[in-house]
Image (tube, rainbow, N blue to C red):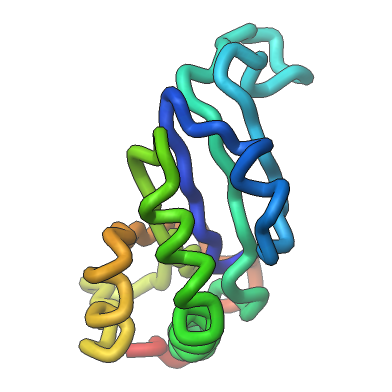
Length: 143
């Protein structure tokens, strides 16, 4: 997934929220569960929460991710407000996964339209950068 909404809280009752939710959840996790069961490190989650797909565009298509995020925020405004106000929720972030380009400096801008939708919903903005796949040299930057 290239853009994901994450929501969590120590006392957030994820099962109760999802009982009446229209979101198609990628993952749901519960406080006290082992975070990565296949790992040799057994660390238990301090929070309950979920991840929801916002965009499936490629890491190299930030503009497309932003367009789909604006649509997601607009179409799901009522459900996002319900989530924002749900008891126990402590944090919401929209995480844009982008590729790390081989440039002197990397600049990726987010338009005011997106930011003005995130603010009232108390959704933070996260950028996760990943190495470009081999053979991707010479691609044009998105911004």
